[in-house]
Length: 343
Image (cartoon, rainbow, N blue to C red; front, side, top):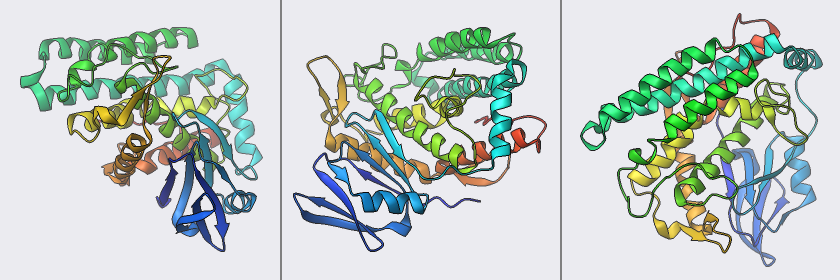
């Protein structure tokens, strides 16, 4: 099993990264702030950083260490990557499946079924743990609807039908998302998803978590030899990591959404961690982003029992496990792609 190494997050826009021997050096105004041994790092994520030296980029490429650039708000910009890994036969088969409507939709159905299933069990967990603080009848009704949506997703006739089922299920799930916010209600409220830009604190955290998780999925797919830009549910578009967007659907509720709710309900994040811009966009401040990333890293280290492997794995490795299972299915080693069904 792959080891989960550390991630270095650069959140200050004035920091410059360079290479000194086998160390990553973080500097500001030509003064060294801190250094880290590169062999301890799996990836470097830079949020609006001043720059990265060519030597460090080259080292990351040669050792297959991920280097990802985001805007200060957390929007993905670019990845530095080396020679494409994986054998050509695996990717050729991936492309054949993507072009074959019948074969591609079978994978997409499993991924979307898992997304809806995981949304449903997020509601069921809330009923179990906080019955006295929510309207359990409404939650049970929503859960029943999502259960039916899982069945409908498995029998969807085509991609358009599947998208309709997924969209309706997401609407039902998010209709009670605000009710799962049990603390800091005056400072954190959710009226619906707003993306570009996020218009409230909850959406700012959701978008940031989704961006981080998509990057994890992209790296996982690359590591097993799959092309993260050719998907089965999301359509092809220049620059769009369609397969990574397919894969993250399985993790939105159990990893990202629950993490955001934990940050609010356990008061790990406060309203002081956000700033509202002139265009009404709400973003995490530099300090808020650092606090968010610190807790995100801790979350990735939590262990769960993988529902298919029946083995203990860290949350940070679950996207890699699913990418590996997908590659095994595409190679013909599995009869069906087993999606991540969390409970």
